[in-house]
Amino acid sequence: MGISRDSLHKKRATGGKKKVWRKKRKYELGRQPSMTKLSSNKTVRRVRVRGGNVKWRALRLDTGNYSWGSEAVTRKSRILDVVYNASNNELVRTQTLVKSAIIQVDAAPFRQWYEQHYGQDIGRKKKAAAAAKKETTEEGEAAVEEEKKKSKHLLRKIEQRQEGHKLDSHLEEQFASGRLLAAIASRPGQCGRADGYILEGRELEFYMKKIQRKKGKGASAA
Image 1 (cartoon, rainbow, N blue to C red):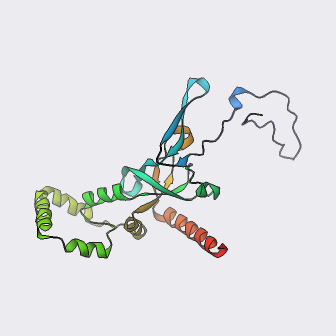
Image 2: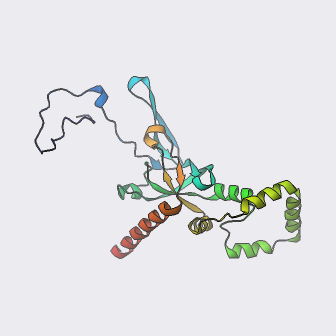
Image 3: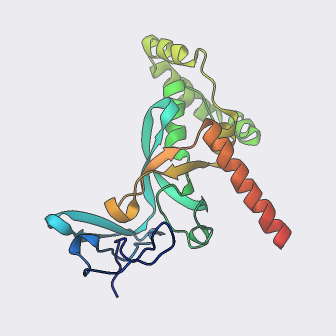
């Protein structure tokens, strides 16, 4: 029997069985789920569908475009891990990329943009900062030269951007670890991409609690 998306096989709201009075239709067909896996060996298949249209079935992906909503910036970033899925823990264990999965992405592209846009370092640990101060005189001179290259107009712009701007403490912690929590908003099995957005605010707090609770359960079970 093929996969079908009809409702003829379903029971009535009262619980009674319905008689199947016709055969299956082409427009009711279903296909095998793509179960897109997190892998560096990117694989996307072209699927011809009803009406001569095309779907792109991603089988293996490891990158996507992620949007940082509050800063209105999008960067291509590497997917590092699948950490939470509301529908099924098995999808976390098997590293399956689906819509609404909570993942960890590489923070480097966003850190580079932030440092360029606001002229401030983020996610640098104190030890790293202390080590940076002990640079050789040559490197120090090079940094001064770079600073000189910035025009007064650009410096004024950066100052204006810094006024009243504050980075969320949760995001700052994530930048320090080099991994940002994000949610997949696209459907990898339909469009062949794993794009999404960086979690912020109350949504970030919600998922951080969920992940922490899951870790606690795992530790107690062990």
